[in-house]
Length: 377
Ligand code: SF4
Image (cartoon, rainbow, N blue to C red; front, side):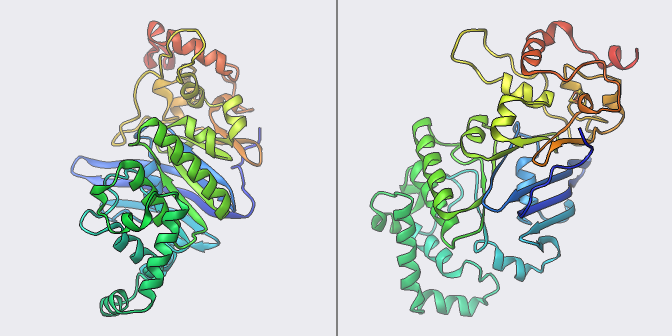
């Protein structure tokens, strides 16, 4: 394997060496530690990992939604060859909602309960990309401009496109009068209203029941194809990652530990964490209940040295606690950050298969993998 970052040609979004930390009374939390990530034009990319591994913080940093301070952000974020971090607020306002948009995590709380759905969608249709319009101009155009009627038409058209039943009535409803599935459709309509090039979807459908969740995913898949979108999707659900994405990043402890095209990642996972996640999926055919990965995500106030996964890894050894492993690639689209794939370092284990990890996870508790025993020998 070569010692390079995987590359995506013709990227729509490119994040390089992103670091995000937070100041607090308890100290500095070092959350995102050198993340590289790219989404090609027309590509659907998923970032998958446990809750608390840094997915949403990465997304908020990309969208410049973190207040600095208390956040400290560094690194480069390029969207269609424009550096987002070097833009003024006014310049970024013209991109937000117009060229890149987001579907937030929770459909129950992401809409404003004091305005009707129609007001919120019509505002998006009329003012997306006009964040710097003055308040007087905004008010004039909102209530008296002829474009208001056109924007309302566009909002209804989008509700029809997301297969909303009775769109005219929904326009006059308040969000609290709609079911979770309907609110999720409103959020998708809002995000796609101004035909963005890049859509960021954070844990879509998480709060919905299984059947509605499936319908929403099918809808989203159709919209991605028909609008030719580049998509960055964030999820803790590997089923969603497999169903919708072309390529998957696996994130752990604020780092991207593996990336590969979707089928390659699920059929031949390399990183012990990826293997652990896949081995934890309950299987319908025979066998014992999956035990899951022992332990929990790291404390960011004092994260583990070296590989952040080492306290939970069944293959951890001395080298894992010294230095951060480097990303190794064996193709332009795949890479893994683990010393077991380092050609130059003698590791006491061969690169594990998914079956090896399944077996080890089953006995992890009995072996009580103690760092002292291993690292001091
Ligand atoms: Fe496990 Fe070491 Fe690889 Fe980290 S670097 S995943 S601790 S083997």
